[in-house]
Length: 349
Image (cartoon, rainbow, N blue to C red; front, side, top):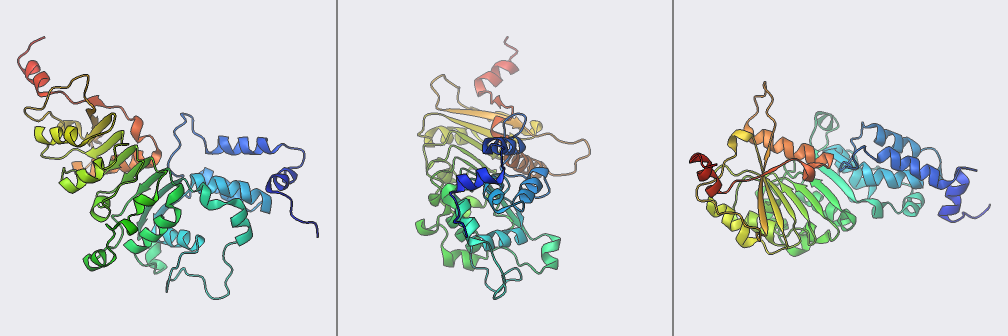
């Protein structure tokens, strides 16, 4: 038997006279978008995901290349069953679980998985492990916080973009106290030194008090200015952009607190809400050219027949654009200072 050649040689041989670069260029075009804004992850039913998955079955060599693209662009973990299968892929213990492999049942191909160096290509992830209807049929249990922690500890070091929803995760108070997720050793974000973009649910700062060390863009579906929340926002001076739902009782004091707590170069704070809910709090400070913080407003569309509450609409808007990967480029306008509001009300041109 001939020995296996180097991965590059095997890749070249797999496509005969065609250069490998041509195949890679085709994959780049496949996962790319017309505006260059790549989503956090393509859904399992998306043509990109289905095409890449099909390519992994073409040959052992094609698997190495296609699987790298698959794990980079298509990690869309939207329910408890997919979460369990993803854990199983990385050899994390499922315990007594309906999706656990039975004794002697074939698992992943260790040789190919290692040669593809999959974990290094896990750079972008969407995870919201809902217990969907088909999960109930499979008798898949709800995801618990310790399972989220050890998964993030396993793959977190290579992540650059993350959208994570803790709302579907089952976290009884007794378990939260026992595992102490706020401790440094269990703080998942401290294990993510390369993470630059984070979109997360408001529960995130309830469980973890330390943000990623090099975070640049953060969006959280919180609508309050609680001190522990602000601690999470402003612990790292690397932050450049912050999206959050506009607090219902926003005051000039809250705006001042944003300026007081930030110690980086410059921060854009973006309040998300329906247009009717945006207004400048009384006595809000005047803006200057030397300000390190700029406060913006984004209008959430409201369908004519929509019966959803304003908070739900704002929450959904953040998730939608967060997963699409275009949240940070959304149109916004700067909040007016109170002096500007008074000038407008006085009719001064």
